[in-house]
Image 1 (tube, helix red, strand yellow):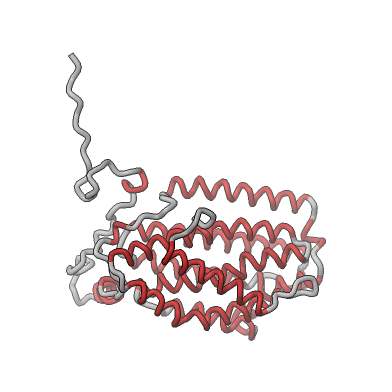
Image 2 (cartoon, rainbow, N blue to C red):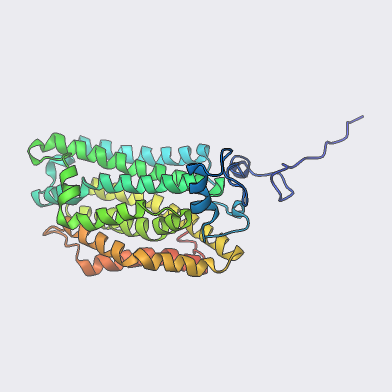
Length: 338
């Protein structure tokens, strides 16, 4: 006689009355330090850490009754993220191997080498700023679903930094007289880079987790990536640098994924608390002009006789990137963006 089938049980902290997916099982409600109305950390309420999290996270005007309702559209967990990016890195490694076999670095024009030294290799510093911005949101977010999504975004930033660092080293080897790799002075003193440096450092001073998340994901990152992925790819192709062009088109896939989860988060928050839409817009409006202008100024350093990154075209690209996120918040993302 067969034994009776045991009733499948759900999880006590998971309220949807079904067995969670793998994504939900390893992502759901892991932030024991987010307890609305209670002291975040198990120490004195007056401890600086508790006061910080209470003011800049729990009491943020960016509100939702249940942040655990958010889901990353890509449903990434560590296993699936590593598998996905391993495939991407295998592709990039193949590009590099192919171009190194063809000695492509030695064929770059002097004009393009000048542009790479002025703006491309110093971008490592901007990339680290985006990485730090991601990790702040990760540490402050009120849901582990949000923290996981932005943690993977931080890993994406590190991926880009590493690839640019590798490119920098190869340029340093092939052109030792050009000073590639000695970019800190350019980042700190080049007039065209100072507005961008100021924009990034100003962003890092934002304490409210919601404002930091919105400014990063709907203004700063899309504006920067519109130039330092897409416009770089266009300029590189026009200057005969196929490797850099294809590399940054691949890196742009990470940017598109960032837009997906950011839009999903905003839509979750707005569905729960409609005033969040006006709040998001007000935060975007506070920084959009300064960030956009800063990115346009920096992009001019990439211009060469073969490809002019004109300010009007670049500003249009930046505006389209920022608007894409806001349009997605209002209307959702279509299949080409999702």
